[in-house]
Amino acid sequence: MLALTDPVANPGQAAIEARLERAAEVLGDLTAPVMAEFYRRYPDARASFAHHSPHNPARLEAEMVGNTLYYVMTWFESPTEARIYFDTSVPHHRVALDVPPDWFRGMIEALIDVIEQAVPAQDSTEQTAWREVREALVGLVERNRFI
Image (cartoon, rainbow, N blue to C red):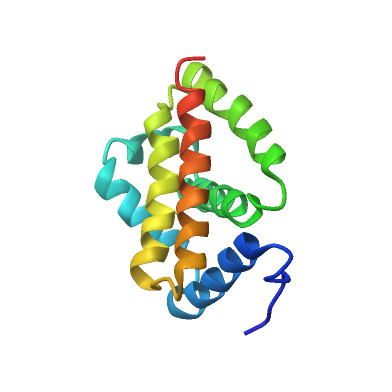
């Protein structure tokens, strides 16, 4: 295992990276399992992906999973970046693209749930870090629900 972050200096970030590394070994590319879980919970979203990317919805799916993964990966190092993204993206998608905030929340929840189901937390630090990331990112969606 390659430690990217000093676990003493930034234990939350190190815990996120460690679990993601194990998830990559078990799951490989997260796109297919995350989208399967997301569509299981939000079957109507499939039509929206096809509408917004009619020639290649798989590319849009990969982009959305990748964006979500990025903010999970960077939350502890750059929460302001996530705040800016969600504060602009959630309202824009709701108003301009008719994408409900529940789908943003659902993508976050699906990604984290897929990882948590495939790769159990190794210790309480990991559990806490993943809970904090989930609460933070979902909280950003919720604070922008009606803007």
